[in-house]
Image 1 (cartoon, rainbow, N blue to C red):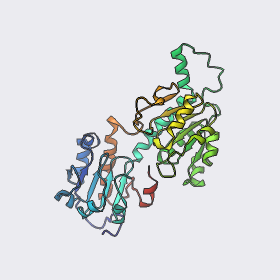
Image 2 (cartoon, helix red, strand yellow):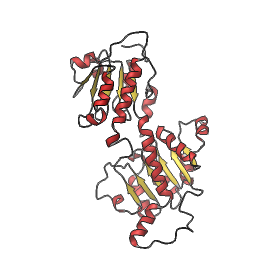
Image 3 (spheres, rainbow, N blue to C red):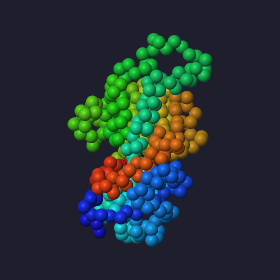
Length: 338
């Protein structure tokens, strides 16, 4: 059992790396330039599973990403030399268990690389919501476009944006909003008044936030306490004409309650995530003009997947140099991760 959670630059270590993840995504996350960067610090071997192999037994670093298996005590028993798990994706909750931390391994996540892309999509949805884009788009299709210059509900004006969750993404969004002079209120039971002050936002309780929010943007993790945190009662607290923006997790919202509010025409919704996901084609949310749906695409996707691998590769170089890992995940944060 390893006795420290920090690498020691005083001890020379010959690193060996393995990567285990969904093989279909591996070329996108770890393309040849990224693999070459890793190989400059440690030989890299691909594994299809963690069932046990000489390469796993010798590995000091395990790269994971989407589709990686859970690293539990049984895996660790087969990897006695492992010192670090470098996750080239977002949350590590489904990849590393408590045993990884108990044995003193370092854990790093590239989740921070997703914060700005998701925050950018959330802000784009907020801008569309502020401009009543769905309503105007429907009017345009129906040929009933009316004068917009005298409509005080179009544009930001004195609108209040309620942000639920001061996560990396939540904070990135808040900084964008505040830089543009937007009025923001925040609910996060773990956020301190000092952090809220630094962000330039007012902390409040969730019911009050809902009652004040012209646009509600969700950035909380899924925990037992957050499932359906935006339920029928809290949706009713939102002002008439408000919009719900969700780029976090679909289960934060009671889908059927949201469907009822949107079907009535009282609320708009901009959803990158749903519950269930994917949403069945026959579901009512697909057929409402005041609902905008995207297929969980706000994060790092497609041509940008290599950003995750590049971050993980640089973490390896920091590990080899005895430097702190920029994406280090600590055990006490694991229960509250998305």
